[in-house]
Length: 259
Ligand SMILES: O=C(O)CCC(=O)C(=O)O
Image (cartoon, rainbow, N blue to C red; front, side, top):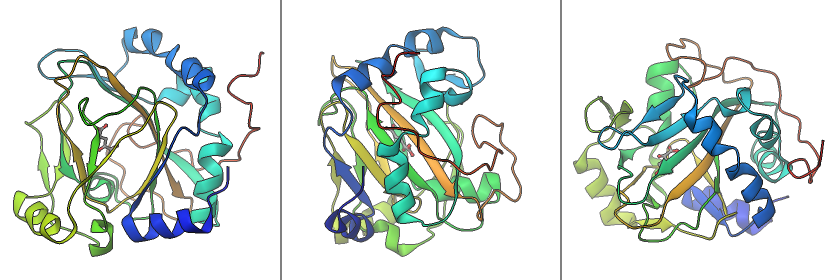
């Protein structure tokens, strides 16, 4: 799947791009069918919500499951990433973020590069986050909020928040968010299951809790140029993988082929 020139322009201008229903219902079903087994595993990559103890995020999935092993090389994700950077890319992080109906908790306002810089020693904000919606994501079930164009400001001061949720995160202050939102507003990324969402490392984003009766799960693959590795990795492998082999896209039917 190649991005059109207009889509690349939109990504560069806004910092994020939503591509409605690019994965089929059969592909989404195949991906989702693996989750109950993965979530039931006793694995350090399964991180539970602070309150409900439901899985909040499940990481390192391409090393734990054969469907995710193929998904990280899917051309619908990797071809757009290769259009953005015409250099070899490695797999930095692979996860499913869950927001269970009624209990899924927030992700505070942040930009991903703050964590990549502070915890992994990555030098440049070149990582690209590639998402697939595994459920319909609506205004009600905890969509990701973006501040359009906030990626253009580069680095904002960030602080490590270890208490708001079970997942330590480098967050930006309310003052920074207020001033960015006054200029650029907020957009919530919604779409049917199978929708692809692409966003840059410095865009400021977050998401509210899910008080609706509908689950919300999103697959996330972060890729980074091989020339931009972590120089001081401190996090476990499932949070930032250290295999810098270049990703090569598989065939279009790699998820649903029978083998
Ligand atoms: O899943 C969410 O709601 C937030 C995810 C997020 O902020 C991220 O992937 O960086």
